[in-house]
Image (spheres, rainbow, N blue to C red):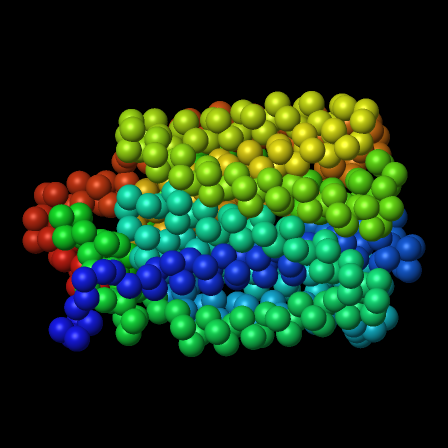
Amino acid sequence: MNDSKLQDHPTHVRWHIMGLLTFVSMLTYLDRLNLSIAGKYIQDQYSFNTQTMGWILSAFLLGYAIFQIPGGWAVDRFGPRKILTFAISWWSVTTALTAVAPRLPLVGLLGAAWSFAIVRFFIGLGESCVSPNASKVVAAWMGEKRTGIGSSFHVLGNGLGGVVTPVFIAAIMVRWGWQTSFYACSVLGIVTAIIWFIYVRDVPQQHPRVNEEELAFIQPRETPANFALVSPRRRTPWLKMLSRGSVWGLMLGYFCQGYPVHFFHLWFFIYLVRVRGLSVTQGSFWDSAPYVAIALLSPLGGWFSDFAVRHWNKRRGRHSAVWVGMGLSALLLWTGGNVKNTTVSILILATAAGFNMFATPTFWAACVDLTRVHPGSLSGLMNTFGNLGGWLSPIITAYTATKFGWSKAIDLAAIVTLGSGLLFSFVRADLPLEEAIVSDLSHSPAVAHHVVHGAVQGEG
């Protein structure tokens, strides 16, 4: 770092990076939720029944879940700057294809429903890289003491995207048709990919606008080695990860987290219009309510998680944040799904979504706690399970609602939410994978030294 960069106060590039990461997360939800808003028009136009629409909506989540692990591996190897630029461009192009899905050659072979489903699968493939990238960015740019609040920026973007999407998509659909809404999302994505590539760097040391004071703020000299700088040539210890009870608690807990939250992503608008009897305009307004709650409560959850860690320790601190969030979310889901008054029900259910995302930053923070060397790979593994739960959510919700009623479908989501908090109890955020790796190598001090030294210097 040049002497000319020395200043009395740290620069603020880390916050610019977090702001841009928040916008990218907003964009993912814009492109994820647009079909659920346009779904009513598409259902009417192509005579899709509820279960067919459920399969179309879940196709995105299947692609999203399957490619989480490759996406996490890729960001650990090549860095978030290149990988996310490619990913945003990919899903932006395929989002535009949604508008022409009924006219693709696939329709003649498989039908319109399969054509929509396949396009959505490829959008999910592109967006699968975002969450693992977010963990890698947080690990590099926010430091060990701010992992919870850093992880909340990604979740905050989800909430803000959910607030904006219904109004944005509904306004375009009413004036220019549902196809135009997908073209608009595509253009916005291409512009974002260009900005991300120009401004972002993989680690603070590479960014020309970061001064020494900001580097010291991100990584104080007395802290352990910055594992976020580990060489991309290091192999991901998949077997080591899968042998840890913490990793299984993380994965299964996030599987249960993904199930209820995707009720809000994929069914809530249709629930409001078809079950609660709201108009499309009213539904698009109230569909934003869960995301307002998410935008308010996710940063609070990230802050609370870091505060609890400082007050107690990493194990008790992370547990308390998830227990509070998931416990309250389950209670509110159960209550809101059985309230007769529509307005009261919507507000309670929206708050339930907010408390789900109060807990969610802690899941992502735990990925960084458990491994600062491979946070992308671990978060991709975790998010695979989360989105497998999300993939099942629209299918099981449609089946349960059809057979037993919507209140029972929401009750089931409440039970699964409670399971998420209980499963997280097995996560030991105070026992990182790196300690186990170094412990295993302790019989060979030279090799152990090479592992730690390589993490700092970027050696293979």
